[in-house]
Amino acid sequence: MNPSQISEVFGTIVRRSAVRVSSNVGFVALHDLRSNFGSRWAGRVPAQVLQRLLRHSHIKTTLDFYADTERAALKAISSNSGAC
Image 1 (tube, one colour):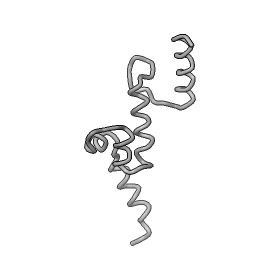
Image 2: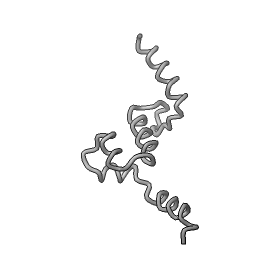
Image 3: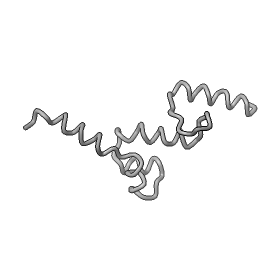
Image 4: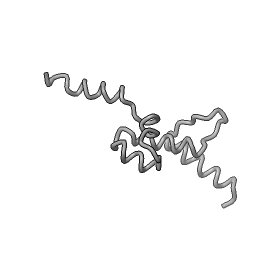
């Protein structure tokens, strides 16, 4: 494959996967893919697992960027609202 063919295939994959583009340059950067991966898995796996998947050297990095504690707290409260 030549570079333009790779770009075309990559673009198709990105469109189908609904990756959010965070850059202002109009194309998906590798960092966008990494960020989307972390965001999608953040609510599905423990923070320590996500840290290893993203290869962060410190758990604080993972928690700073991917721990949505406010949403998790609201979810926990709403799912336990009938328990009291």
